[in-house]
Length: 453
Image (cartoon, rainbow, N blue to C red; front, top):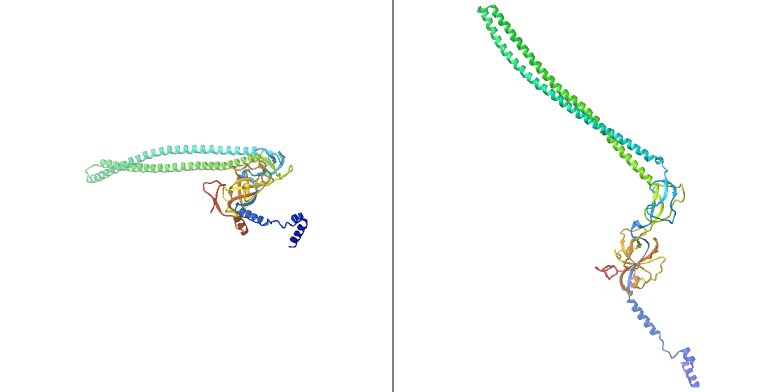
């Protein structure tokens, strides 16, 4: 009020307003703070409704899509002494190139002619097997010959048996005939004795008939003896046949035993031959292990042994080979809470160490310097660091990953999720809620529309 009175007083004296009151005190100006305040509030409200892409941020490193394309340790198979290095660290090698040459250190393999002498042992053992095989063949021939001889001898004995049986039958008939004659002679002698006593016949006739009776009796005794001898001959032939069978059975059994013994020697020899062949092949392969070769094209790094005559143990790492040709991928580590939000084929954005980028995590379209990827594998087992490992391959539909990207380079991934308003994302972050769980729409690409599950 005082200033207005002062200004009016000065204007009354001077006749016009002073510039100092206009520029310094600005008491006639209207304030624009309210207007700016409402404009800012409006902008904030508009920003709150701008779409924001939810994402999961994870860290990881560059690796390869296939495990055989990753850096691999080159281990020696046998223990040895380093004789010569054919490459040095940093050299690029082709598959099959010699890395290092080793010498033998074990007593069992120090003989320079070990392979040749083992081959001689193998040949000698094979000759032994051939000898026993020939012996088996000869024994088989002997057994066949004895069987044939037995068959011939048994045939001869069987023929004699048939003849003897016929002779026994014939002698049996002779005995029957002699008995009949003896019966007649007994009756005639009795009649002659009665007639001689009655004086019907003379003494001479009686003596003739008595002599005739004795002759018939002698014929009967002879027939019985011949019959008994024939039966004895038949029994002897039967015993001879059994003895022949037994004798040849023993001979054949002895020959068969010799054959089985030879076959046993053959089996033992074959076992020795197989063992010697195994040793021979092991020695031959071991001779090829004295030169450690590159398994694939790549660069030699991390040599564990540095000098000559150093001893390396079996399975010990000699160098590491980084493959020259590989397909890049990235392995990232995801928290268990975020794992359910990821799926195979899902879009992922990347930034790599050493490659500048401008990141707007909620607006991936406005980001600069990022690279695209697709999830190809999600491990189901928790790793030692308490996170789940996710493998992401290069997105062929996006910009290519840098050609100078090296294995092991650090990477930061942004797995793109559902589009939500900014106010919803702020509310979620303040309350500590996880991003929305969703699945991709059927029939649409991984970068297309997303729907809430």
